[in-house]
Every structure is written in structure tokens, then in C-alpha cells.
Length: 206
View 1 (cartoon, rainbow, N blue to C red):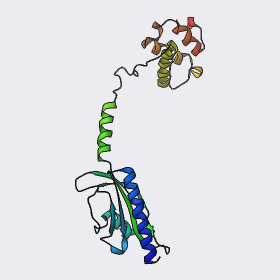
View 2 (view 1 turned 120 degrees about the horizontal axis):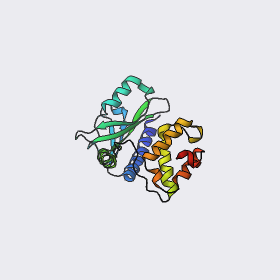
View 3 (view 1 turned 90 degrees about the vertical axis):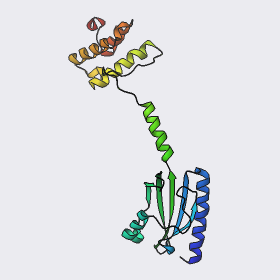
View 4 (view 1 turned 120 degrees about the vertical axis):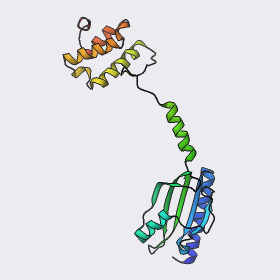
């Protein structure tokens, strides 16, 4: 690839970098490296996440990959990096080759995820729900009697790990006992409903 074509490629990438940062905002940074100037290969920086300037060196991670793999180097996606200020970044590096297969540069994306990680931690802490000490699931806000009983049945079936139609007598007794402990039979009509599900008479339930 000629020097002229190289320049055209890098100029196009600068435009793409500007569009990306404009789209994803101040947490996004795009760095363009021209390996003709290694190790100080940074020729263009869009965004201010790492606070570098053109002429800054390539990162040690990319340099190690280049030295190890040469022109066969593979793109690196979504790896963690850290700024001098300790902010966490999600980074990706896409390498550039000329028509002869020689690696000539890299297009690097750095996205500051520090605030997102903090927010995720807060959300996880807020949404954490402790399991009830009695082993039962939480309450179900049903809109009908059937929903309440079905919820109790579903919880018990998950514990027994078998559908009612394939349960033996002992397992059906265990299911009924569990429903009794949950208070299912305090509701009028529940005996008939459970009997139907189990394929037995209501007198069997009693």
C-alpha cells in the first residue's frame, strides 16, 4: 500500500473516530495508531478519557501482541484497562493491514465504565433479596384464587422435581403436605382444585 493510500485510510478512520465519540459521548475515546512511528505511534485521539496527546506511545499490551504475533496479530475486544487516575475502561483494539498483509496501525476504542460499575454495584445491592429462612419463596400477588394455588403448586413441584402426573403415591402425599404447610387449604375450593391436578378425589386429599 502506498504512503498516499495509507494517509487516505488514516484520514477516513479519523472521521469514523469523531462520529463514534459524538455518538457515545464523553465516556468514549478513540485512538488511532500509525506503526510507522513506533513506539510513539498515536497520531490521532478523539475524546479525553486517557488524557493523552498525539505522539504518545502504544500501550504495552498492544506492543507485546505485536512482538509476539507480528503480522498475524489478532484483534483484541472488550478487555479491561485502567487509567493513571484508577478509572476502569473497557477497551478494544482492531489492527490495520496493508494489501501485502503487513500490519500498519491500530484503531483503539476506550470506554470509561467506572460510573457504570458503581451504578451496577448499587443496583445489585438494592435489588438483593434474601431467601426466606423457612425455605419457601416470597409472596405472590395474585389476581385470582387459581393464581394463588398455582403459585404454591409450582413452588412445590420445583422442589419435588416431578410433575404431578408422574408422581407416585408417596410424592403426591409430600406435595399435599407441603401445600398444607403453605396454607393452601385455608382457601375455599382449593381441595377440589388440587385433587383435579393430582388426578385423585377430594376425599383422598382429606
